Length: 484
Image (tube, rainbow, N blue to C red; front, side, top):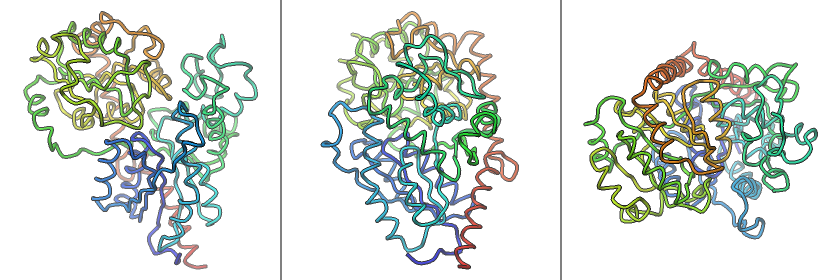
């Protein structure tokens, strides 16, 4: 490699999955447009997700960042056929290290900094070899980051399985974590994904800084804990950069004109958008109950329907955007549902342009798995939520949204533990869209919407200033390299 150019050059690494790729791509765009960086983004693509492929193709065609795809290695001999998603991604990211190192070496200029997502922490060693700053970008909230870095301590102090404990877990400086809210890797301490999770928690603080997809006014308590030497600061010991909300931008309507023509005809804030993210799936029984709940509510809706699985969770994590077509929907839904709801609802197979839908003024609620990307997209558009956590850290997100921020409601039964019945679904839909409680929640989420906009105000916004501080540090490194 040649010496660095006058511009700082950041290399970003994204692990497989739509929920990981989007935040990294959008961070790269901000580094280019706001801070005059050159950015190269290496994406380890799953090669099975149609939605991810579309996103990558769009990013490559924009030419704003240099996006390079690293083929996912064959790990069939390294993991069990039923391995958890966290295990699969962790092993993939471990196996691509040699290819990633070679790809960086092939660049024309020495990078100014390396930024990896949380599954790429083992590649921080490459930055040490190059003697450049290394950062971890965690695309979720600060409370989850606190749990991540504290997990190695919990591993030493908690006896037995986390989910059978009688008391909440203390995370210094943060709200306690209930056993039923633990992240998926903590559900079984004998599973490989648990050991991968603890390892990542140990490696995140080895970076030169942690980027978090949140903003100062949204989570002041957890952020203080991460920085406070008396709380988690003694574990992290590195700067915390709040860089959120980072969400994907609006896309062209394309083949969705009919859907948006329908939305244009609906009253303001009258439509419930129902989607469970890029990987969330429901059982056939739960799909049936959800259909009846939507119909009984007599409220307008757009529902993204996927093929059912035997258990709820991340069943389509690597296959989002492919599968069922329109002809399959009638067999998944109660007899006559599509015809009875023809005037008030739209059912979409597999995938829909979520950010464009949430931005539309006719949308007044979001029934969501509350993945952090979807959560930020909802908040930044002032849309209240019915939270339906299924996997990953979504149970923690649901607790934040309902108990801390007050911008969502949730079912009495945890969706990952049992079936939510049609009557409760009907009640929740009406609470959000037509009851007085829904107007109060909507007022709160619109306050957060304004707070999110303020965070990215040029010069004075907390997230703008935070990322500017990181950019300045990388720029100083560039000058030092040029003088050597």
